[in-house]
Length: 281
Length: 331
Picture 1 (tube, one colour):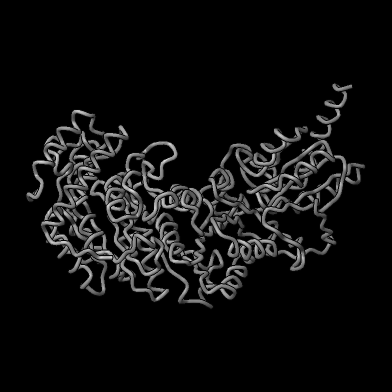
Picture 2: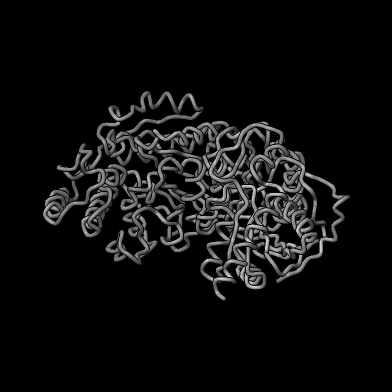
């Protein structure tokens, strides 16, 4: 399924997904809005215009796979999966509640459309590399995408996986770094710099594309370039804004892992309502 | 309780490393199932995965020295229908990649097989850093995981074949040194089924790995003193064969556990967790008591760390005193 939405439709989709993210987090009373909002435009583009997938048949063998390595932003993934029809939107109300299919971090055996369980940072790129290797051995031509956080790539295992994917020239693997510059303790540059980020990936034999992670058309174009690039895996370094779309959450580490209360939700929704049909950049 | 007469001639027992059984089992699994793949970690020959690599080069994936990535890639491979075998030294596999095994493999119940080589103190000269004495504890506490500690090379081969055939994570522990081959190709083996290799009514020695042989030797010695010791080969530490173990405890009224591993959390702990709740009897544990290993000749280390037939026999004599005292108190 590819919807091939135009820019206006993608932006409207993003606005709606942001509203759902905020509502579900507020209802849950805990969770991670900052990274969910920075990555949602990328996920919206992926699930509407890039991935070959079928919400009616989540285990379709030939589907493209998205591995969410930064598992804590699963509210963004859940919003997109519900929007695609993997499960009913009412399920979003159960986020983080006992008995819900929507766990605090992704669980593949509970949630249709979630490819892997995770939340312990740094593990997704290895899994994505294994899926890409298995696909190649099986002579299946699906693509594998892996969404990572910028703080997350401080984990050593990411670079073990990067080395292996480069070594095996997995050009059907595409990593995305949600480079919002913030992590729990503050600015990534101050906590533990990941720079020069681009040079690191180049040194591990990856093709690198840098893009504005909120410019939906450029993000889509980056995915096309990644698919066209042969002989190496590609990483898209997506420059994003933590908490994007909610003025009081933007560029704030405090909103990494705190849910909005009722009044804050109202304020956020009012801001997003005003943006209906308007470019959210 | 299944009885198996091993028909042993203690004066004429062949020896073979359990890692050889793993290597043979992996090759045979590869022949049976084209989806079986093996991940190498630079120690390929040392853990006998070279035998698989030489036969099925297109199903061998070199990962280099990166245990966490090795487990993660195996998880990904399993999601494409492969049956990946991750082989590494037990200390590094179970220890260094524990979180990957826990969250990526076990939480999702992925079909990943873990071969933990160089288990136990008998690794010898390499010393404490390479002697895995904790894997049973830290693997068996994981939901969905199965843990097998085969007694010899033949049994390791059977365990490897069985692991390839069932769905879900399995940890197989094997060693580097030659150990007595007490079973043969025809000896029955079922994952999850302990079996009795020597009948007895005074005490049940419940052992795994090379300690099954040591326990049989101890039982021979004890027989000379009129002590009739039952010996159970408890190769599957998880899931435990509760029926057999409870029956052994009920029939004999005293238990000794024996393993080449820390007593904290190991096979003996698993057995006593069960018996304390279902059939409490006096018990003694043979194993390593809260210390790291060190370099040395394997035989010397086994003696030094209390892991021989002599130690098992001593534990039996101790537990029989406890049993007698308990009976006297009741009277």
